[in-house]
Length: 266
Image (cartoon, rainbow, N blue to C red; front, side):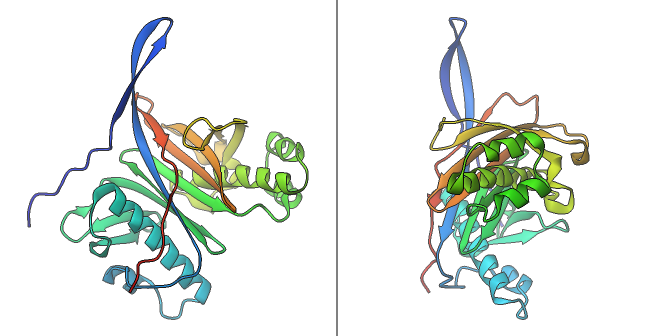
C-alpha cells in the first residue's frame, strides 16, 4: 500500500482593494451536487454500503439511501478523480457521513447529504471546515411550520410574501436551519430554534447563491466557529448550505454552482 495521496482544497486567490490598498483574498471552493429522478441502479454501491442497507428497509428508505450515496460519490469523484466503486460513504454514531477509500483510508473532507421526495443533494468541504446541506421542495403548509419552528423575525420574513413565494421563503428558512444543524453534527436532535436566520440577501452574490446570516441559539451550545450560509433555488427545490470555519482561518468558503448528476449505468 502506497502513501496516502494528499488533496489540496483548490485554493483561489483574488486581489481586492480596501481603503485603496490591495488585499489578497484566499477562497476555497465548496462543492455541491444534486440528483433528481427515479432510482435506476445499485451498481455504484461499495460492499460496506450494501452491508449497511438492511434488506428489510422500506422502499423509500432504500431509494433515499441510493440517491444519497450516488450523489455524494459523484461529488467525491469530481473533486478527487477517484473511482466511486472504491469509495464507501459510512456514518458515525451520530449519523454524520464520512468518506472511506479502499487504499487511502479516511478522506480529509467534511461531507453532508440530504434527500427529499425524489431528490438528493450532497456538499463537500475540506477539513477542518464543517459543512451542512439541506434540500427541500416548497413547504406545503408554511404557516404551520412557521408557527411551530420559526422565530418571530423568521415568521415575519415568510409573511412578507403570498402563495407559492411564501412556501419558497419557508423553504429558505428551513433549509438553512437543517443545514446548520447538520454542520454542527447534531441534526434535529436539538431544536430547530438552535439556528436563527437573521437575514437573506435579495440577489445572488456568487454562482447563483444568495448569502444569508445565521446565528446560534443557546440550545446549540458554545460554538467556536464562524458560520457562512447561502440558499439557492435549484429547479423544483431549495438548497440551503452552511459552512463552519475556525475564526482564526482567514480563507473564505465560496460555493460552486450545484453539479447535476445521474445514476450510473449497470
